[in-house]
Length: 388
Image (cartoon, rainbow, N blue to C red; front, top):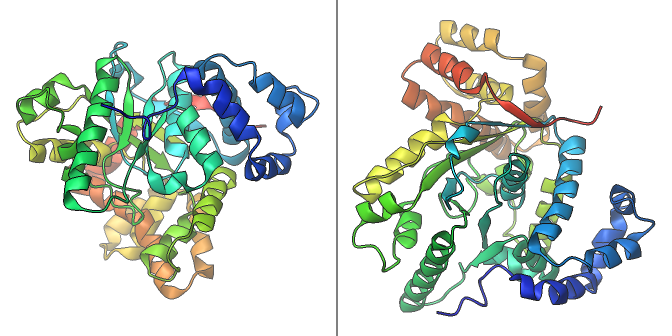
């Protein structure tokens, strides 16, 4: 089966794709705006960076260069990146990371950075074809082991055939010992509600090598993963989309959103690895993924404060939460909602409050949730700290 139009680029294509990438006028314009780029790589100018990159002979070398950019991004636009439960990545076996999805490009970039820092291979990652409209963005994604999920397919038969092909490609990657990241639902959870889409599991388990869903979920190492952002990437834009106060997306706006995600302030970021999931049915696995993804969400001050402001709570619960919250820190994130129109403002606050509501449904009580959060994240490992 041919995967040429969706597969991540092979190392045999590295040189030709790099030449095509650096000859792209749009990409050149982006590089010119990145005034500190040569200095970051200890080079004199962008031309010397290009000549250096042309000497790369492996995807690993290209990704190592990208990790220097990610490290710079974390140090200058965040308050640090932390991680919990790396011990659950017990061996070198290929695993299927099923993850919540918050940032178009940074979810997997930060995951790969974490994996590289702790000595694990990086992942192959799914990216929607809406990101592939801009040539240089497509080249960067597929050079970084990204593969294409075709969402704009016409016709029931054609959609089914494409789903089978994607399932086979992912299965082949896993059989070869690679790890794969894919969102547990189609696209980002723009309203803050992380819930697994059963159709994603249906696609993944289509591969003909498995006789039943139980067999598939037992043989494929399904690793839930949660990424928690103190300040959600492009949160004001997402709120406007949810509220219906933004015009339909365009290629230009998609690109501006990506740049905004990269350059925007993020606060603290946390990645949590869950326990392997199996199940007799899709419904079993959906429930297990939702439980782990929602309970492994690190709830920041802004989440708690938004919950207080948008939910009808008892005075005792309200006081308990406010005693737990760093109010100035939460207000730093939520205060920006004041400049939004009313519908977008409501969507903005709800986006931050919903993860608390989801986690509380599993904990049963506010006190249990606060204790669970303390226990889950008290031993978090710091991967990156902000620049002094």
